[in-house]
Image (tube, rainbow, N blue to C red):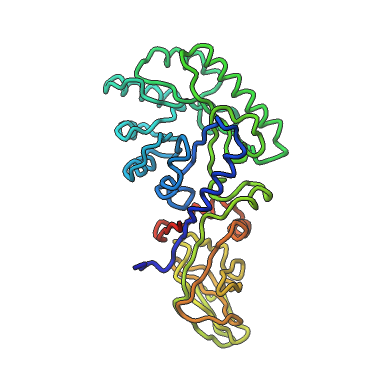
Length: 366
């Protein structure tokens, strides 16, 4: 029995379609690291991982806790934690998660712990900053980094990687090409002094599309898995993964001059029929969508949101829509709708989908 009236449906076939689309753009030997951080970009990381675990080489999460959740759900695939914190290193090792060691502070803390435990050949990843200027070692750190790494046999470098700052922007082609070249130069320096040749990866979804020559050993597929290519043509070939639905809980008819919602933001000019829907800004419906900016679909017709978005509810105008209490309401069911919502909220689809609150029940459609 589904006792949640607002649900996020996750389309397993769409996920598989999107994965296959990107696989076909890669060399047969290129591995895929599927990024399932932020609850699988707002969907459900565990369910996404279960759908594709036998088809990818790695999963990536942002934080240790996200990796632990996958392990506790029985996911055995290697998991890279992109941004581990000092206080979580022991938990990370207990669940056999692989840390990205991105500066000397966390590298030295990890090596100290590895000595005390002790660990043997524990898989780690090293990130270099090549222009995003967020986290990562600098190219000037290479000599010191190498001497520290070579002094320890507690660890094994699984991969060396970096992250592109503007791979989706054609105007930044020179910058991106420079990032890739600088990364290749750093890797060569590392390879010259290491006993093994760790895997290397720099491409994100837009990188796979625009810079496929730089696929190296592995690529990191994030937003593309969920149906967005940061490019209209690519997005149109991908399938929408998430559909957000609710129901009509009450229908009202109000007379001219009456108002709807907080601060009486909507004033009826004519007799108006409204529907109240149990989903609001606490569920990820931005307040920027209120007062006619956003809409939902009821029986395939657009019902504009009227008045301010409340914490747990929205009201919509259904004057010209034939519907009844209990009818289904679609908040979004396509990439186009998600992009439209993002544009109206002056943001990007990433924020729109990751904002869907955890109190919305997730369902996988297989």
